[in-house]
Structures are given as structure tokens and as C-alpha cells.
Image (tube, rainbow, N blue to C red; front, side):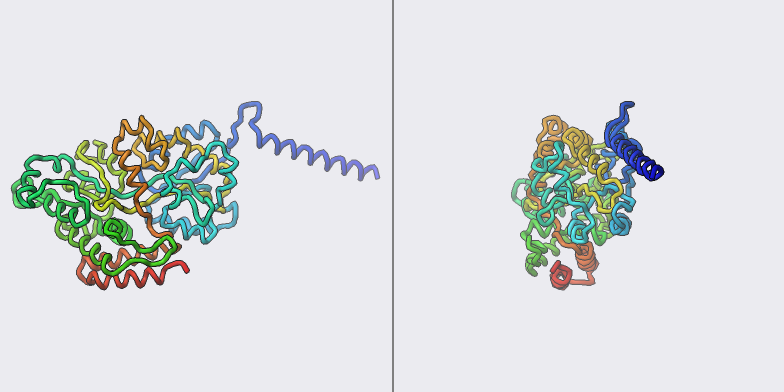
Length: 442
């Protein structure tokens, strides 16, 4: 009997000690321990400038929280393949505590149930207010079927970047007026843009070789050429799907847009453009060999960096001719397989705070928050962000489809074959419509 009482007392003592220990781990100790001392947050991110800006600021978060942040930077082409096995892992066993998600993957990841809903964390937080984000960004990489699974990280809405020194040259302006009987102006339609790009393709050295092309383009399949072409389609009034997921692409608009895209590729782009990816197309512009480039709006700060560009101070940005371009972007998400979801959420609260989002923007980052877009310091350094805010707000996102990567594959293939001449524009659009129907979420 006595032994039994002693045993029970011993068990109670052990339980009491465990509860005391647990209480101490959840509160900062008297010696100044921080909330996430000893915790490593593993993050997967794409190798883009905005990732570099986050990395440059990590010391602040680590000093504040005690956590260590390990960011694995991958090329975009490798990310999806490496992510999926970790996202399907059991709860708490995945390799990544936090990930960034491309808008292409939003429907796929959420339909599979791989991402943690953030609504309760947002409601309990005094640091996060989703109303500060541009509605277009929240709809694309924030909400899915009424719940919030991500906070927007950065936008890559596409725009027209052009050489203002060439555009403003009086000799060029006089030549244009003599040829077309009208003043040189920024194009307001895709046909006008193709005409201008052909005009700007020229031999400036007088050696008989074209040394400035009217348009730098990226015809590599599938993503580069698919993303580029959609700007032509959207600005000419076409779309692949409506907001309900129905295919709405029509043969006539699709064919017109594709024909103009192919025409620009053949008459105003460098000879190697059909196989160019982002790096080659960027290099053409950065080396001063192109008048224009339909690309990500965040390219202007990069092209103003003398370490990467020979056209510093010469580039301006405007909306894609027609006023509607492709909206793209990434969001922060916590996988259900995350081993450290609370630390991951603390990182999101920090990295998406106004102060840190502003610092990233001042480095050249692509904002998603209206208060950052309109901040006086940000606008003083990057006046064009006033126009970029409207571009991001007006752009159209890629269709929210769980098989978006397969749709991009089809799109890239038919565009590439049309450029190569092995498929007509009519046949390409017919196949695109058929495959878009086959791949649509039912």
C-alpha cells in the first residue's frame, strides 16, 4: 500500500515537472531566450531578384526570433518536381516548412489538399491585414474557394519595356512620320506594336547588319513562349477560360493573336529568338540590342543596374499595347507537411510586414501591397511604380486550373510549331481549344 502511494506520488511529481518544462519552452526564459531559438525554418524559393532581397534581410528576422532560416533556391523548372513528393508527405514530416507557390500551381496544390488554410492564423494575428494587398493578387495567389491559403509575395505582371532614348530621338521620329504620315507614339494595339517593332529593327552602324531589333522575344517552349503569347491574346480581347473555368477562346481572335505573335518573331526579333528563354531575351535588351521587350515589370530596376546592363537610365515601362497583359505572381504558403508551421507563420508575418515589404521594394522588388506601391520613398526611387500598380490591377491571371502545367505544355507546343511552320495558326488554335476543354477541371 505504501509502495503504491509512493509510486502515485512519483508519477504526479513527474507530470508536474513535465508541465513546468512545457510552460518554460513556450515563454521566453529569464536569460533572454527567444521564441524560436534552435528552430530551423526550411524554405524553397525560385532563383529571382525578389528572393535575393529576402535573403539580404534575413539577419533581422533571425536576430528578432532566434530562428535560423535555410532558403533553398532552385531554378523554376526544377521546383514543381521536387516539391510534390514533400507536399504529399505525412503531417510534420516534409522537408519544407514554408514554400513560395507560383500562380500556375494554386489550383493543383489546393485541390490536392497540400496547403494549410491561413484564415485562423490571420484572424488571430495583429500583424496581418489582407486588405492591403491588390485585389488582383489576392484573387490569384491568396484565396481559393473562399479560404485564404497564401499571402502574395511578389508580382510578375507583364508589361512593355522600351528604349526611351531611341523612341525620343528626333531623327527616328522624323523618319517614322515620313514613312507613316503620323507622329511616332506608343502603340495602343498589338497590330500597332508589331508595326512599330518592325520599324525599329535597324542597322545603326551602317555595316549592313541589323544590330538593334525591334523586339526581344522568348520563343522557348513551354513557359516562356506561352506566357509571352498570352499578352497578345489578352490585349486583343481573347482568353482561354472564363472565371467559371469554361473554355471561351474563339478561333478568330486566337488566330489573329497567334499570327501577330509569329509575325513579330519573324520580322522584328533576333534570329535565335524562337529558342530564347528568359536569360537570352534579357541579355539582348541588357546589351542594347533591342528596342522593346514584353516582359515582367520588375525588369526596369534590373536594367538600371550597371552591373547587369548597358542601357542604364534608358528603359521605360508601359502597359502591354491594348492595355491588358498577363498577370503572374507568387505567394507564401505553409505545407500541411511542415514540421514547423508556427515558425513558418511567424516568418510570413515578418516578411510581409509593411516595413520589410517596403525595404524589398526599395531594393527593386515587385510589390503586391497598395501601401508599398504608394509609399513616398518607393515612388521617389521608382516613379514608374505608379503605372505598375495599375498594370498589376488590370492584368489577367493565367486560368485557375489544377492541370495548368499541362495546359502550358500544349500552348507552348502549338505556338512553337506555328513559328517553325509545321502547323498553321488555324490548326494550332483548333488544337488549343480542344485540349483546353480536355484539361479543364470538371
